[in-house]
Image 1: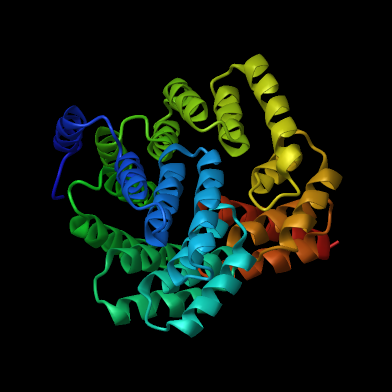
Image 2: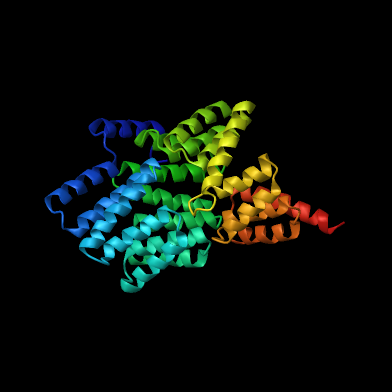
Length: 382
């Protein structure tokens, strides 16, 4: 291992002592100053819009996407149809989980400029989320063909390797990406360490997972992604009370329905039943409000209706909405779980096999597949 969690924490603390602004905040301020000097220059608005989008990732505050969209309209007003503005628009569609629209936009941009690395990244992202894995792999490979060892290409390739069950290879690529990321890009490096923590946890290496997550929080304190994965480590260690504290912090930083669901589960695991019941009820309310939107907590809502509320009909209703939009492994798994809850084990088994065919080693999917296969076999033998 090339670093320790303690060293990373010290480095992060020194960086934060030098400036209280995050990389995205610095980019926002710089772009705003440039716009003040030259308010009719479209590229400055593109830079500001992208900085707002990056701030959305830092904070998980979706209002920054709205600011980005407003800023982007200024760019397009100055220079209608400019290429860079359309690239930012594609990124915003990805942020809103409008994956079908993102594919459409990215494909048009790719035809116009077939050697743009970023556009291939957007094609890889959107196709992966839709479950179009061959297209996603092809786009990620083009990124690496165009510029060997580029960080965006490495991270996309790593994610796709993970989806295909190649966890060690995914970790190798994430490490390469981390080693190639500039020191001052603290949020990017924290994000990469969080992904490495997730991969180490998936491999059953709790020590490395803990170190990576701690390192991410040292670089970017209270980083909501890192809080979430460290909470998973604590749960795997049997430290449920500690997991609750971390998940409460994450929900305060990023008050989204899916984060509340994880907190409710942790509260239940800690024996805090009454608090868990309240949290689950609030989760259901929040999740239903967004269930028809593309950016939703439908996977968690399906799990809630099957595993907690025991409302299989509601689970299937939500699952059918989601499967109409996308066919990634996680949506296939959620759909299969809802079908099984409604007693349709044959169809559930068929849908789960579609997810397994990709090669995923996700523990939740493997557990569901085992349960569904057993029930399907038992039903068929009657």
